[in-house]
Length: 314
Image 1 (cartoon, rainbow, N blue to C red):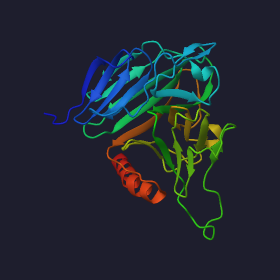
Image 2 (cartoon, rainbow, N blue to C red):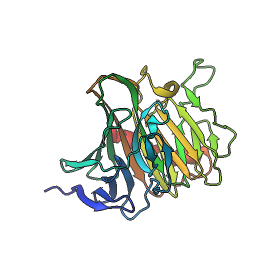
Image 3 (cartoon, helix red, strand yellow):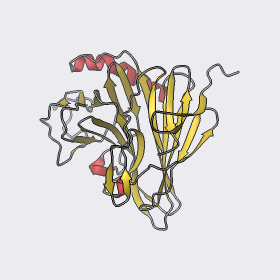
Image 4 (spheres, rainbow, N blue to C red):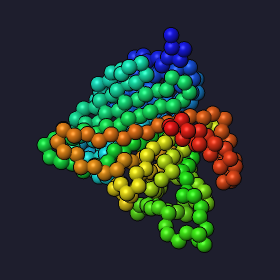
């Protein structure tokens, strides 16, 4: 008998309607069925959702219809362009259970792009580990170049953290370490940014409505979000020599007002008709994490946890 089963049940969640809840002894994940595909909630049981929850009043109107941010974790295809990127995902999706620990959610084919989005969400039997497999399929009749783009909309009031490349003295190494990509609206003097020797941080603060964004070739393959003592760690791949969108980004973060996103990207691929591309992230949650107010305390608090997530992937 399995001492640590994952329970999967059909339920409702907030104003999102029908959802599928995956849970073990400590952690729960909600996958939407009445819209999406999306993961709308990820938390310790009895705790606070690390993801944002947005209502139908939040809307972007375009030629494709009314696109709602909704919150949670969603799948897009890069590069970003309007209106294609903002194809509405307001309709029910097909959801089924796979085995005893995984839910598969398949969206409708996007009429404008003829791309079908699909997610497999697997909760580990113990602990907080979640594996999210993202799939984009070209259902059209001509090749399409794109990259999977996994966007997690985080609960406001926290800080996104991602690593600088390991420090090497100018005396020891002269070549550049990686790409760091800016947008036209990126203001590096904005007080929400902290550029340190070991980490870059972007804080979510509702008092600042102006958008900020940065991208990077994140070769260390992790990013985190810290809010009220909870640390969310996202792990993702980096393939040396692969062609990533946005001048070589496999990681991006964005904020505006009370919105902040932790985003990762796969490499660009040309999908022939009927073909798919697959991209995988792994998530972790940690409680009672005090990052302090400087890089030394931040490093001491989070790096053992980041190292632990890497060991679990091996």
